Length: 108
Image (tube, rainbow, N blue to C red; front, side, top):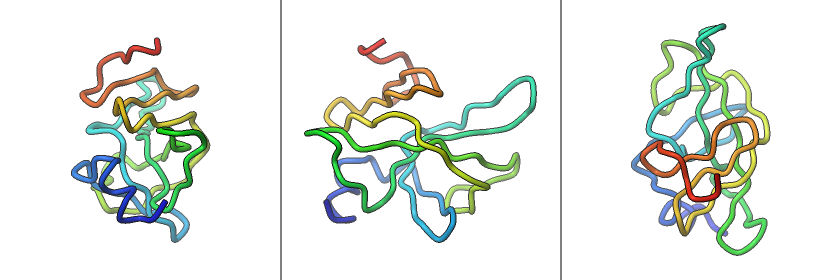
């Protein structure tokens, strides 16, 4: 899948993040905050991602600073399940399954 096509199916209005020279389209409106450590994380999809199965892209969890802004550099990232671009849902194994607005998705 090309970056142009990915941007049409993964809501690009959420913005993007950079990490290790790679661009990630954000799947979330808001970052999740670990109340114990204060660390913030947000789900993203590599801009040139290849579908793992029809309608699904591999998703990563981007670890970001407290003062991070969209388009900024993330500290690091790790695999975190899949993004269902038909339903616009994040099916993560490190984060709760979430829909586009942050609520629980139908897979949970």
